[in-house]
Length: 258
Image (cartoon, rainbow, N blue to C red; front, top):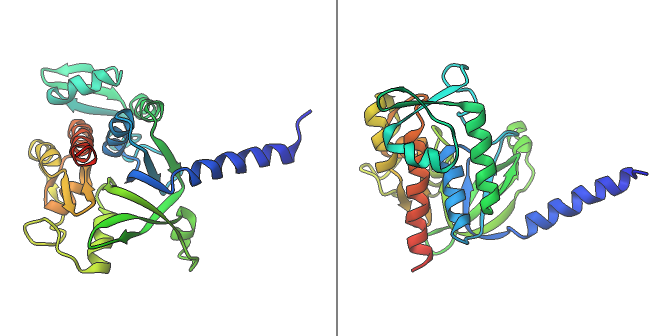
């Protein structure tokens, strides 16, 4: 016979074990979109302790809605090997263009990342970063609902060797760092340059090119990278996002393993 208190106790005990096990990690990822999921997968598969924090209920960022709510997305030839590696079922539309069901793509990315060892915390928002010796060294976290309601409730903190800003267009982590610490980023202006308008081909290339360490301990990927470095937006073509996540993971692994 089911006992309601046992059910509640099981949820609470399991969740808080998971949380306390991830108060210190190798990499903390903010944002559950495609670049964050790929980075999390690759880092976890390499044996690193990685946690991903998403302020919303759902994981997947902008993939779910495809283009204007039509739940299909496009990837280009350059990303096809990675797409096939993740079992994402690409269908050739024209030479060099492949369509993917956005719901299946999102679900598959989440499943593969978690099976590789990535731990995901949804409904948790990044409020600030931890600074130690002029380096980003962790995250200040609060419930996503508390942040949305703007209640003045103190947060909790985790430590990490690196933080990945995969928050998309707002580049929330980098923006918070600049706003609160008035630091100079590794950008042409020393600050957040700002996202440009639509130019899909250029934007896709820039998404990967702009994926890098923008400040000691802080990497940017996906549209956060283009927003920080002044790249173009590209709409519902996601190959660059996937490749960006892989590049971010590879770059961090070089430093973690050095």
